[in-house]
Amino acid sequence: MPAAMDKQAAEKSAFIRETYYQTADGAVLPLRRWLPVSQPKAVLIALHGFNDYSHFFEQPARYFSSQGIACFAYDQRGFGMAPLRGQWAGAEVYGDDLRGLVRLVKQQYPNTPLYLLGESMGGAVIISTTAQSLLPEVEGMILSAPAVWARSTMPWYQTGLLWLLDNTAPKLRLTGRGVRVKPSDNIDMLRALGRDPLVIKATRVDALSGLSDLMDSAFANAQNLSGKSLLLYGEKDELIPKKPMYPFLQSYLSTEKANGATADSTVAIYANGYHMLLRDLQAPVVWQDIAAWIAQPDGALPSAADKRAKAVLAR
Image (cartoon, rainbow, N blue to C red):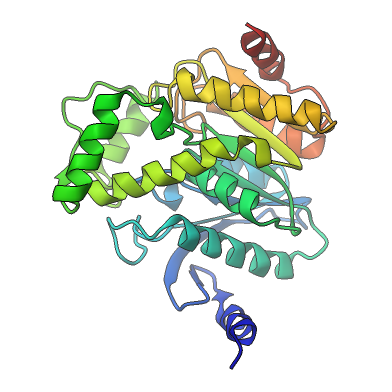
């Protein structure tokens, strides 16, 4: 059987049910959905961050569904209750899984605009996937603190240590204890994550190396992004530093200007935002901005974080 026919047959074998998504190669990924009471005016597919899982979208999705937006989120391979927990599946696999779900959801909502939302690693997956192959079913993408901390922007000792461990002890698990990083100001939420058995606490070195490869790709593809997009970043983000993020945003905006793109693409920077913007104490402000952008991509954001972004990046 020709390769093209093999691929088509595999795509037809993928399907979604109430609580799971079976991919083209037979992997079963837990799926969550939050649907509005009436016909949705938009659809969101959300991708979680590294070591997290689909539960990350619980509170934002409740808000979005109340605004008439249908929401879907799934556990990516290696995370949550998905297969191969703790292992890195590879950027190509993560991209294939995303493309497959987009196709299936679009079949359910053929006349409803579909958007992608990615937090941290999820944002990097979206950037890498859409930059490599267009997704005509997708109306636009929302990137919340996308993981773009490329090796080229890391200190030499950090990249050197990662290379050494990946080549000598790839299955070694690191806990990150002693690393003082504040991912959010929502302390109750962080404590709940600490108690959640589905959140990975000890990370394999080869998974960190895979994540770094993905971030390299995302950072390099800033100039390849096209279409409607909303990029969100908190000035107090300690996980994705300003050193890689601001050049990434400036590269994207300069490309947008050179290509004559419209104002459909928006950057928002929140003065009091941390890495977990969608779950920070001021998260409802971000949710409202996202809903407003979906409703009117060329309009101003209610929080004025888009105006702040222009001022910050101009400096």
